[in-house]
Structures are given as structure tokens and as C-alpha cells.
Image (cartoon, rainbow, N blue to C red; front, top):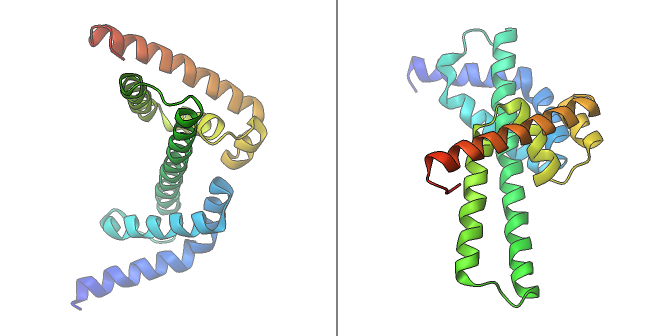
Length: 181
């Protein structure tokens, strides 16, 4: 290992030592499961290791904010994957219960869901996170507020604004796409 690699490894160890416990508790609060929190923490440190050049001082507030942002985005990705799996499971169960939808209907539904997911991805994180937790994860306003460190009224307002913004974005996309969402 050359000097540069040793320095990177030492910085990563220092970051892990300084922030591992706090990051774990944030991930646990957001994801609600020890296993998922551990996975998110692992993924976060992998991402940090790929971006060590962006970190100047291990103990700075800027560094802490940067790695918490990486963790939150990692947790949101995990929540989206979990919600997608739930949706796919529910879709499969609905198809079985309905005797199966037509392939055309399934394809149209899938396209609409993908379009909505793309629009949700474009939302600011402050709107996207409460929306995903409320609707994709099925959390109450209170549970969402606790996970995000907000008041329930703030969650309700952000979800309301997120829906408004999604409606506008969908309308704009429909106009641009000649009627397709």
C-alpha cells in the first residue's frame, strides 16, 4: 500500500470511528430495522470511500453534514426499493385475485408507475422523503414526522405541496409528450 492509499484508509477509519454510532442511529430511525440500518451504514461508508477527496477535515460540521446527506439518500433509496418490492408483491396478488389483468393493462400500469417514479425522483428531498414514507411505506404522519425530525403538521404540508408539484409536473409532462405521462 502506497502513502496515498494509507492516508485514505486512515481517513476512512477516522470517519468510521467518529460517526459510525450516530449514523447507525439515524439509519435505524429512518428505516426501522437493525438489519436495514446496518446495510445502509455499510453502503454509506462505501460511498464515502469513493468520495474521500471531498472531505477536508474529519471533525468539521461540513463533513458531518455531507456524510449525513449520503446516509439519508442511501436510506431513501432503501425505502424506495422496499416500497417497490411491496408494490410488486401487491400487484402480483391483485392479478391473482382478479384472475389476471390483460397484458396491455399491465404494461400501461407499469408505464404509469415508472412515469410517476421519475417525477417523484425530481421532487426536492424535503418533499420526496415525506411522500415516500407516507405513501410508499404506509407510515402515519406522526411516524413520518418522527423519522424525519419534523412536526406532523410539517409532514402534512410537505406531502400536500409534493402532490401539488407532482400534479403540475405531470401536466407539463403530458403537454410535452403529446398526452403521455
